[in-house]
Length: 112
Length: 114
Image (cartoon, rainbow over all chains, first blue to last red; front, side, top):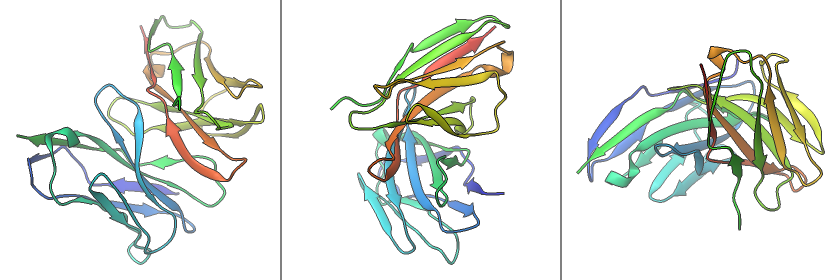
């Protein structure tokens, strides 16, 4: 079935380190892809999105490129900050589906 | 511009009881989706309401029901609560009428069943 596989956490980095969180999807079609972030005790915030192959979503220094050939949407940031500590979820819509399908989340901790 | 709001923030119930959670969508949005997020997991889709009707449902039993009001706000009802219903319940809104399907989430309601 349709699913999202995320890099398992937790991930611990020092401030200013580079970040990559891997995300691959399995879907019968061409989904719209999203990254959401969840800070402690809060709901999910939409971080970035891409709706077609080769699109690059970006926001707050984070980037992800929709790679149809590898069915991937890896999240990257060149220099993380302590304030980036959160759980990151990869998700997609497929076709006319009304529901988001989420990965299991990746916990990121950034140390000063 | 008010975002998605949910109430209450936290709730403690006993097995077998019933609970109602509430959600007001982001201004300009007409569609509400509900998700259940168990601890350490990604959100799981429960159902979606648009034009006061349930439009799609995930793999949840009939104990989970909902409603959407003319002002687009929504309720999630869970009957005969089980310990396994303990989770964060998230409401998300979007605008199907304008074709903007990206969903914006509220802060959630933390339900604990004892």
